[in-house]
Length: 67
Image (cartoon, rainbow, N blue to C red):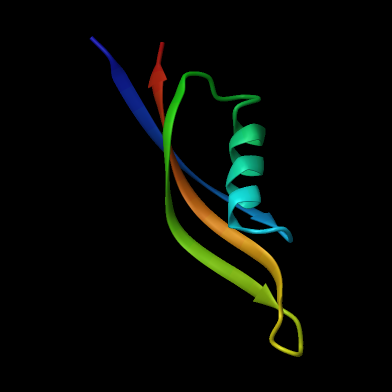
């Protein structure tokens, strides 16, 4: 029998969406084992005064199996 758990986390990067996802997954994998998948369920941006994107932000749900 397998039991999966889902947690939600937020991550950000000035480089882009993919980097925000990768850095979030890399950080959470330091303490959460058996990660199987992630769903990006929200994308946001922080902007400068001129409307330029200064930071990409993602909210993700991480699915992992419990030992």
